[in-house]
Length: 135
Image (cartoon, rainbow, N blue to C red; front, top):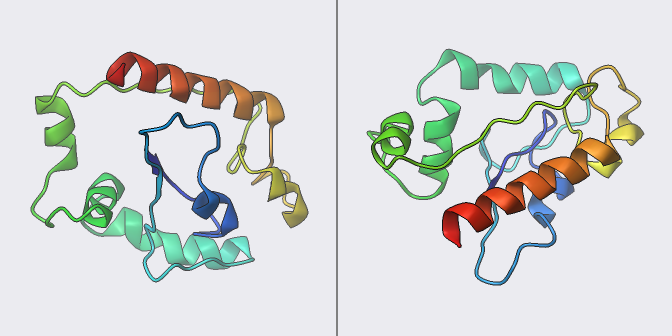
């Protein structure tokens, strides 16, 4: 399982990884910005994240690069050709960092905010997907 950090970067929350993974599963915190950057202010985070949207490789390819794949890898093609199991869940009344209990410490409730209900539902969905896809 790849754990993607919130907008403030690779801080303690994604590094600690998800709890409750059954033995045999592995969680890797993906450093999309490089160099383990974590910042405290959203404008700085936005500026650091902009290259992810402006340049190649795309974020999904960066995730594969973090796992050691070469830059010529097309992550979307791999997922499509492998008929990968995937799901998209949208949770109402949530914003960035809805799985991070420390989000409230940032005092930016319109941008990042923890949601215990959405966190629990998202984690249950992730475990269900893993169980279904991997047995």
